[in-house]
Length: 355
Ligand SMILES: [Zn+2]
Ligand SMILES: [Zn+2]
Image (cartoon, rainbow, N blue to C red; front, side, top):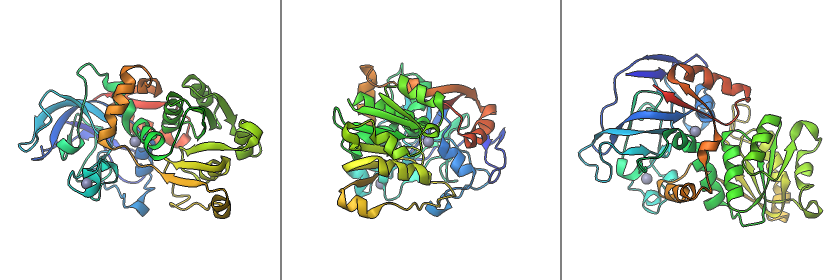
């Protein structure tokens, strides 16, 4: 089969012929129909995340936002059948640890991130396998649009899990979103659907316009203001600060701007992960966080059991991940698209739809 294969840190991926994946006893093999291209692919390609144990090796296939049709089912699988249209969270749960058993498979004790380590290759390929299918595979309605589902990918699902299940967003809350890439636009759209007043923050006008389309009520253009947190706060009554602030990028500036945009008792939601520049460490105004009782939440992926909530909101039109999709490309374009994510000028989510 054809696949986009990792050659080494910051070396262009090569599209080459490789062996099709074997079907695990507890897993499935899926024929790929669509796979989102994510900033996480770019981070891994740059060798950014060795401090969290992600060290890609040559031969690895990226791609963790897949949608496709099941072509082979392992003997031990009970809930997935050949022909099912499926997706899965990017971090695959074991199905047996206490987190998996309590519905929090996104923080599984033995979690396996798809497309980042050799034992679970990803979906920039004609076929991919998914381990522990009963735990991880989400069976979709047969008429679901694979491109929109791939757009749901890790970014939309992560934004949903973070805003719905980690912090407390209620109607009328001020929610700031710092960074309007794929996950940021997803956060804008989800926060709007939850009834929040949304402030989108970015340095790119096109992305801010896109955020307004997706439900942002106010914007802050970082290039036009001196003090980003103050500019965000200005949109709230008496500049009291926002109730929830999301860092959807993961560089020191956006983490700090987000925490400093909060009002008293505000909640910061960290979705973006840092680059080599930060190495996972960013300094924070700890004393103010104490005296204001501000909170810092991490949010990592989305457990499989929460996908139903997203699909119910998609059914009624309240959420539409397809709107975040920026462009569709073919497998041959994947190496270039991943490389270009370093320019930060990609609008919306690119999805590979031709393999
Ligand atoms: Zn587990
Ligand atoms: Zn992703």
